[in-house]
Amino acid sequence: MREHLILKLQGPMQAWGRESFEGLRPSELFPGRSALLGLLGACLGVERTDQDRQQALAGSVSFAVRVDKQGQKMTDYHTVKNAREDYRGLKSHDTIQTWREYWQDACYTVAVWNNAEAVVVLSEIAQAVKQPIYTPVLGRRSCPLARPLFETVLFAESALSALVQIGSNQGAIYSEEDSAGAIPMKKRDVPIIHQPRQFASRMLFMTTSTGELYVPE
Image 1 (tube, helix red, strand yellow):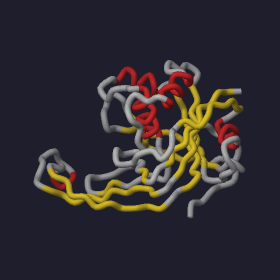
Image 2 (cartoon, helix red, strand yellow; image 1 turned 60 degrees about the vertical axis):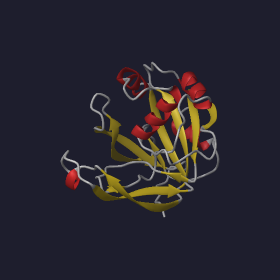
Image 3 (cartoon, one colour; image 1 turned 90 degrees about the vertical axis):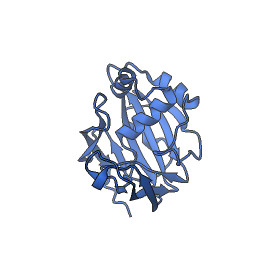
Image 4 (tube, helix red, strand yellow; image 1 turned 135 degrees about the horizontal axis):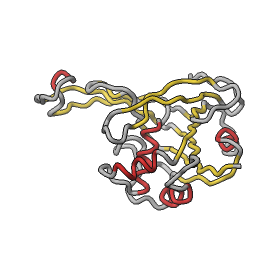
């Protein structure tokens, strides 16, 4: 049996970044690894410049995310000054147009567990989630929480078993842990700590709590 920290991500708007260019900022269907590490890092008070603590946290935890409610997608229009010229080089110019995607009224359940050689233990993370040092947000600062992140701590054989114990929703589950019937997929959302804004790929395994393939509406 393994200990799992269960979080609930619920709010009027959420935005979970994916590969983007300056003009379009799309939102992924679910919070990725970089976003979840940032969320926990904010609760723990990890500074953006503290690469050692960032690396310690990243090496200590794994995630599984269940989509309880996808919500509706909204696109917000912005104009931005001093952006990169033509979205490519570093030279700035006056103003560009951007479109940023958000999910409205989405809800996710997240299982977090410690890896074998964890430095940041689950009990420390759970306490930080209950009493965060920095205010956690759902992807962007304009996306506040509608409820506390902390749901519970429980023991289960696997992340899938842990999520089954929380509610009866049968939405898609994206886990870093393989399971019978899961479909492997690659996601480029692993932050390279010593190369800011650079990401590596990881393998995810998509299934539902019933072991069936879930296709979003």
